[in-house]
Amino acid sequence: MLRLAASFGRLAVLALTLVLLAGPVLAEPRFDDPPEHSADGGFTLHWEAPGAVVLERASGPDFDDARVIYEGGDTSSVISGLPDGEYRFRLRAADADQDDWSDRITVEVEHHSLARAFGFFAVGGAVFLVLIVVLLRGRPRG
Image 1: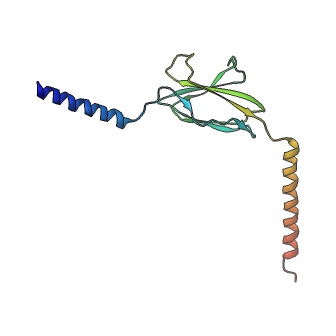
Image 2 (image 1 turned 45 degrees about the vertical axis):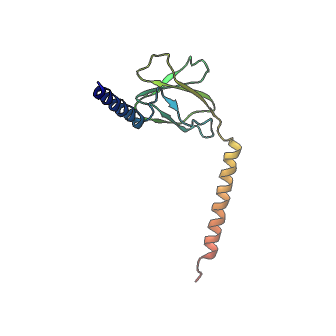
Image 3 (image 1 turned 90 degrees about the horizontal axis):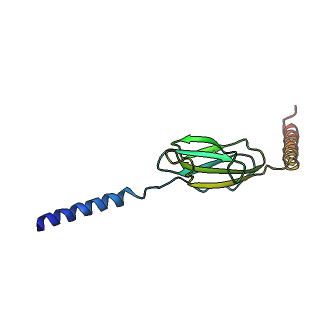
């Protein structure tokens, strides 16, 4: 009887060791450090998930206009080409119920103003002209 108890004790210690070495198991997908703002209409969403996920995007808080933009086993997705506005994203395990969303985020897209873009263009043009003048004045004459 004592031998059986010792064997059971060793088996319990081995099982506990395996559980601890395996590390934590994620119960459901979660976004990993999501952006809150984008100035160019593009960003990358990263998440942690134990398996395949479904990612949806919507413009309203009630997700009435939600559509699936990614489904699969990757842990990130590049989003690009969005016009100004607020966009909501939600994530769930691919094998979860349709209404069992595990995480939601909102990202605001606000592009640089047209005046700022033309300002950068003007500065770039001025630097280009100065460079041409310097190159032409510095060439050997002869």
